[in-house]
Length: 150
Figure 1 (tube, one colour):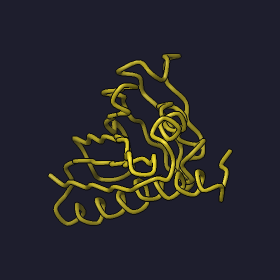
Figure 2: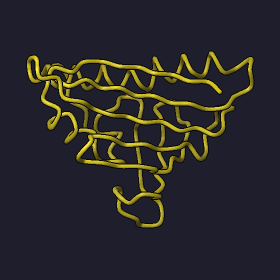
Figure 3: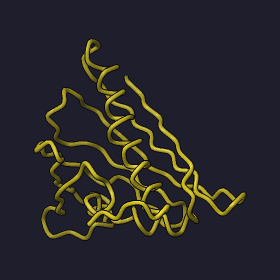
C-alpha cells in the first residue's frame, strides 16, 4: 500500500479556509487543476456516498465518492472510484486544524492506495505534489490576495 501525506500552513482562519473548500463539488472554484465538476444522480454534495465526477485540466476524468464529511472537524474523506491512473483501494482525507498562533490554518491531506510496485512511488509523488500541494499553494495564494480562481 502506497501512502502520501502533505501538510501546509495557510495564513487565514480555519473557518475561512473551510468555507472555501467544504463543498465536495467545488474543486474547480479553488483548485487550479480541476476545471469542471458535478455530483451524479442529483444528490447533494454533502451527502455521504454522493459521487463527484470531475475533469482535470489535462482532460482526464475522475469519479470520487464522499466517505466522511464534518463541519465540526473541518474534514472531508473520499475514495477514487475511477481514474486513468493504475491505482485501486484509494482513500484520502483532507483535514484542517486551527493554529492559534496568528489565527492560521494547518492543513493536512493524506491518501493511501494500492498500485503496481513499479508505479506506486511515482503516483504518490505526483498526487502529493500536483494535487495536494498544488491545492494548498492555490489556497495560500488566494488568502494572500494574489490570485482568484473562478
